[in-house]
Every structure is written in structure tokens, then in C-alpha cells.
Length: 367
Image (cartoon, rainbow, N blue to C red):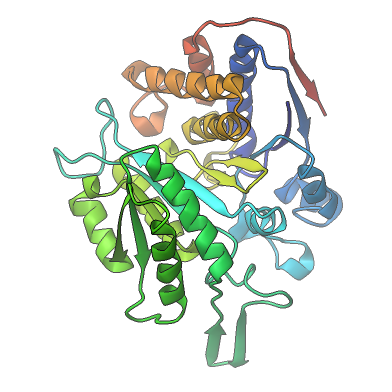
């Protein structure tokens, strides 16, 4: 099992180190050999190579079983013509990692930002390769333009191909959960683009008669997330809506720092924490690594299911179970969750909570 590890910016190296420490022990106990290759991205790459993401790193990524992608300070990068490329966007488009899977759920033993008595357990399935984002909706050029200094225009791309396949992933997930998919749109205003997305979702629904399907306007969906989050099981959305709704759902459920996330294609998957790079606390052992650790767990869940590999599924389940056990103890939480321990200590607590299984010296690291 070969993984490409890209630590990234800000707290990225710290939370990636934490996730890797947990993964190494979980893999060893499951009897799975893990080889880790590292490469610079973000500011480290910009200083050394003049770009935040080298083409050869992106191309190399295709040959791995999975990717662990650290946080990026994209808003602080220079313009693309000066080497400041959006790393997440290039991975999603360049490797066709089109499905951004973002679970959000409340935990009985942690406070949430919902009204008392409300609970949430949902997954947002976000299309990640097109939409309103100007860096991924044109074959050449940029999807924004200024015909005059006082006018700015943006181009949105919605395709039948991308909309159909993301809807199918959502229905496949829902079939294994509570069998309910909600498509998010604004087809009453964006008649053609959101209309096409909704048409594709409805078409896929026909193939899953046992899964209940409905749709909501995006503005109405935000109200329901606050007022009645239990109405949702799996939400499918185009890129822009899914980005906003997943942050809202994660924060309502407790914190962005508790939300795992993967970017998945048909043959490759990347673990990526849902939150940003938090440069203000970088290097201080203050970062909450839960999102990154759970993202790695999701990566191995994906590998287990995709390949029918019980050992990978065991790793994913073991990591998730250990994280929950540590979070349940107020004394072993990071400061943002009301605790007093740091990034490294939290990772060590998760390692200690991992179930004991097979044992072998099979984990290697290569730089």
C-alpha cells in the first residue's frame, strides 16, 4: 500500500503528522504494509520550485493507492501566473477527484451549535470539478472576466456527465444508510444550469426505487439544516452549494475541526481535512487534528469498499472508533474543544485507543 503525503501550509504538517502516526499503528495492527512518500506543496514548494504545485507531483499522484493532502493557505498565494496555483482544484480536476464526501454529525458527549435536543447525522456529496469556480470551468482561460473596470462577469459550468455521476454516488451512499437523497438547487432562478443538475438527479433516482428522493432550494436547505437537520440523510449538490452547506453543517454539528472529508474519483481518493490552514496557530502544537485523522479513516473506508479489502476497512473503522473514544473523554480534547492537550498528545491518545489486532513490522517511510 503506497500513499503520497503532502503536508501543506500552516497547521498542515502538524495535523498530517498526527494522522500518519495514527495510521502507522492502525495499519501495523491490521497487518497492512504502508509505504509513505512525501512531497512539498504550497509555500514550501513555491520557495523551492517557484510554484505551489509542480506538474510532476500531480502526475506522480496517479500511481499511488491514496493521497493524504494537508491544508493550504490558498488565499495568501500569489496569482497563478506567479506560481500560486489552487492545489485542491488542480487535484480535483487534474485527477478527476469529482466527489467531495463530507459527513457531519453531532455527538452526545460534545456540544453542538444546534438548538437543544436537535441531532444531525448526514453526508454531503459535493460535485468538485465544475460549477461557479473560475479555475475549473474552462478548457482554456479563466471563468471570470472584466469587460470594463466597473463590470465583472462569471461563467458557470454544469454538465450532464458530472451531474449524473455525482448523483449516482449519492444514491449509492444513501442505499447503505437511511435511504434518502435530497438534491439541492436553485432551479427557480438558474433554470438551465440548476435545471440540468436537478434533471440528472431525478433521472438517477429511477435506478434506485428503494431510496426516497426529494429536492430543496438551496436557501430553504440552510433553514432546514438549522431547524430540522434530522430530515437529511444524504445531500447531493453542485460545487458551490455543496461547499457552503458542508461548512454550515459541520459547524452546526460541533466544529469544522471534527469533520472528515475525502475527494474521490473512480479509481483514486485523497484524504483532506475540511478546514483551512490556520496559520495563526501553526507550529504551536495547538491544532485539533481530528478532521485530518478522520479524513484518513474515510480514505481507508473508501479503499476497503472499492477494492473489497477487509484489512483497509478494518483500518478505517479502527481509527474512527479510537477517535471517538478519545473525544468522549473531556481530559483528552484539544483546546478548541474545551480540553488542554496539544496536537501531538491527542494523536498519541488516539494511538493508545486503537484496538489491538494483528501485529507486524510492515510500515515503511520513504522521503
